[in-house]
Length: 219
Image 1 (cartoon, rainbow, N blue to C red):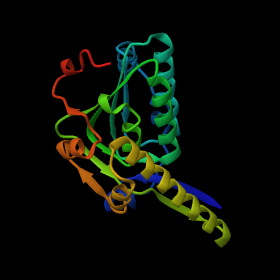
Image 2: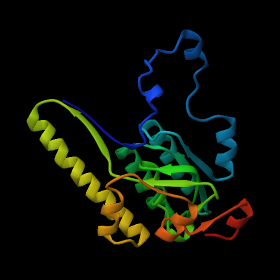
Image 3: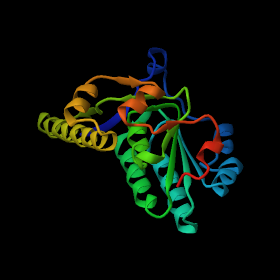
């Protein structure tokens, strides 16, 4: 049996059918682990980027940075999110670690681009008073999707787990936005898109920011 729980936007049709290719020898030599001069500079400024698909490697890198920064000082940490979503459990890991370190190092969450699916779950980990976004940010809430192959009994078990996952995520969204669970269940039954102003009304975002200076003094 194989299982794959995803909570993200499906690729475009022209991308979905594209064959996977192995990197050639030159690409392998040029490949670098997550982290570099840019990341090091951002790290020194207590800034963490969560960009792209959410998976276990991103979860490890992000949680490692958060724990290291929290252990070094109790000053705020700025987390920038631009993600279509991805692996639910990897998103759960980042969500939980953000809440874990927030007690000592306040997390200032900044959404940009799009904050979708598992990316939205991560975004909601921050304290509501410290959830910001840029003017053109879009948000997406929806239910998790699962792909399971195997015996019918195993498929039935995994289907129940997906339902539990959906219920758990809906409770988190309701808790963090102030919306009723019934409203959230209805909204996440299909793709639910919001612009920045709509996300403020929904309870996801505190304020739209246009400048880094607007974060000064926010702790």
